[in-house]
Length: 138
Image (cartoon, rainbow, N blue to C red; front, side, top):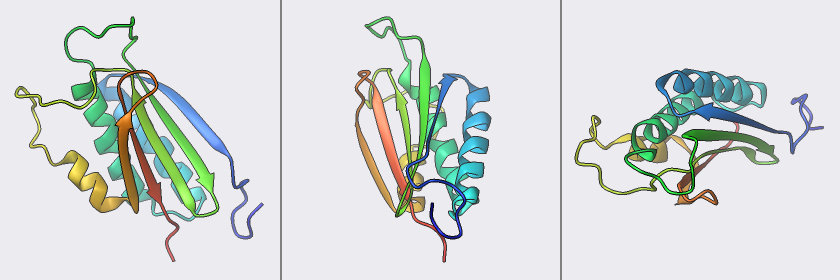
């Protein structure tokens, strides 16, 4: 256990979410509470997770997706000695241009400005994985 933080350093929480608008609120609340319990700014985390999950809801499952996808999003929250790492993963179409997008295209840039580190990669499920690292506030 870490002094000042009643949680084990490697505690991980995972949530399986439907790829729908209601999941954005669930993910935002879970991530915000997790962050606050570990000394990380909950508002910053809430906004970044909201943007990332919204991207997955809006963009991941367009058209046909091979492999029998169930249109789910995974939210993984992990605490380590340097803060928290949050990963949002989908099994959708991956990152590609969407001319029918309802947004302005600033979501990932906003996430990058909020998190201490951001990495975007192809997920093991064939879609996209966005990993964000947030350090504790001083």
